[in-house]
Length: 161
Image (cartoon, rainbow, N blue to C red; front, side):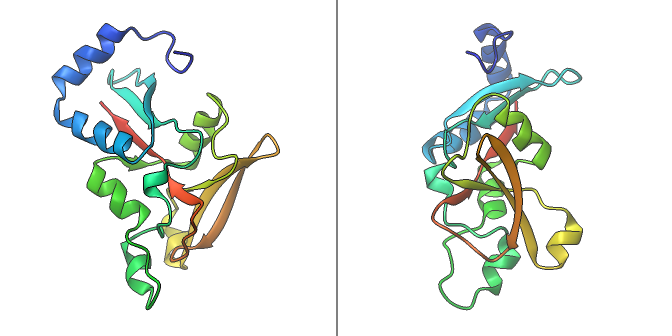
């Protein structure tokens, strides 16, 4: 409740009933252990904002490279998927740096893992991608080759309903 104190369940229920197709995406977030929760409401559109609130990067979305191009560039030891590919398949967005930092205001996330975040085209065109984590009570932004993948790195998603 601390993530959405001003929202009443009736508001959430009405939005979900008005957009039943979004329930599938929320279910996918849950199945991959993202622990989706409402973290806010868009003041302009009224859309509820659901985000992965698992303490660590969702277990079912780790060991992925950044995007399809990075996945295809690997000649051997390819991961099963990419962060952007999975997010697209699930109907969710990968978090931006700003969204990731805002999420960290609601709790302590990724203290043992890390999460890919949306990467500017200029960085991606040079082969890189960005990720974040929280260490020493600080949110850090890092870079890595987009084709890299680690057992402790996944991604967090966001869904507007």
